[in-house]
Length: 85
Image (tube, rainbow, N blue to C red; front, side, top):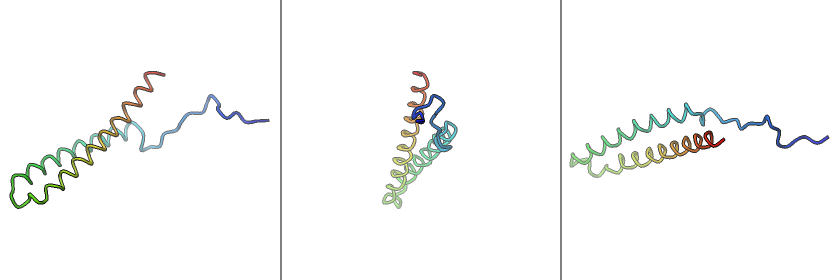
């Protein structure tokens, strides 16, 4: 007897870190980090001593924006799949 390779009851189980709650939490935290990085940009650009350290808030802003965009794309894909099926 052969085992059915594609049974109807099989669903993809998403890990906890890919749940909607985790994605929304990551998005919220990245918004806070983006605000922190923008504040760091203003402080570093105003003070002449910190001009050489301007790359730190820029890097923080770029990385947190990347994480926020990738999380948003993941959530949008999930909602589009849910709407289509």
